Image (tube, rainbow, N blue to C red):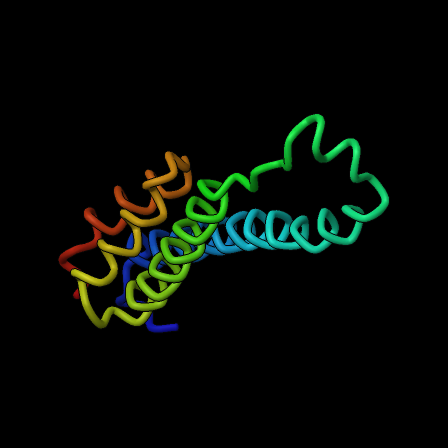
Amino acid sequence: MDESRGGLLSAGGILSIVAGALEVIGGGIMVALISIRIPLRLWFLPFLPRFWFEHGIGVMPIWLIIAGGLLLVLGIIAIVGGFSAIRRQSFGLSLAGAVCAFIPLNLLGLLAVIFVCLGKREF
């Protein structure tokens, strides 16, 4: 590593990558768990016909899939922005990645935004 490079931008990039990875994992789990539930309900339907008609067919919470997909997209942008900050390629992409890491009100994302903003002179 070059001695003249500052640590604020690298720290912001690493924090953005970590927060983005957590978002990708969380969003992926949300989408996967909700998506897996559909075949299980359809598989148990012939065995519980009275239950389904008396209590109504459970509606899949579509907002969980939307929120999980949004977390996936935000996490991917945060990871790409974090790599951009570490490589010092584009300040706009680095800041966008840090902001996407912060959108779910993540403390790591807040620190990433602060460190990327403070390290703007390193580009």
